[in-house]
Length: 213
Image (tube, rainbow, N blue to C red; front, side, top):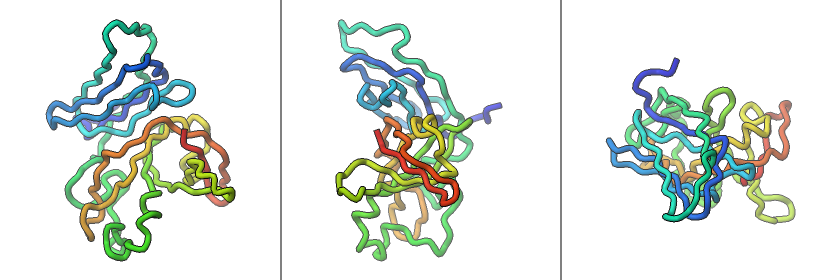
């Protein structure tokens, strides 16, 4: 049974095949917040669309279609609506709001200790995925030995072990504390949909490697 008054809602479409120029928007009228626009370019190669949670207990999905453009009856199939019970997108105050509060020994990357690692810090993302429910993890971009800059993303085997889980991945980049010592509460505005392709995973070393679509 979904909890009453959810803190956030993640949406998943098992089919998202919209024509050129059509865009999907997620609107929270109470907070005057808007997420999107999402177009066919944000869907997975097999035509799915998985979105990171958006704060709010009542959200509106709007599909904008250009005048004169035909839209198939089954162009968008909304198959999953999650119901958050921890405010994973809270902007103020300490804590990670979905994974527990950071320890006092943890150093926010915005602190001076992170100054020598600004490029590496930008390679880290938190991500959401579906596996019988909505889950939260973190990972990092890695390069290959050919220095080919393929978008390989290193995560954990205890999160991603199937292609379905990789397909449902939605990422948030540059999520970090606004101030040194706050231990959470960063912006969740830089989202990336489109999922990933599972390349490898091993349980004994708890590693999963995906290639972002």
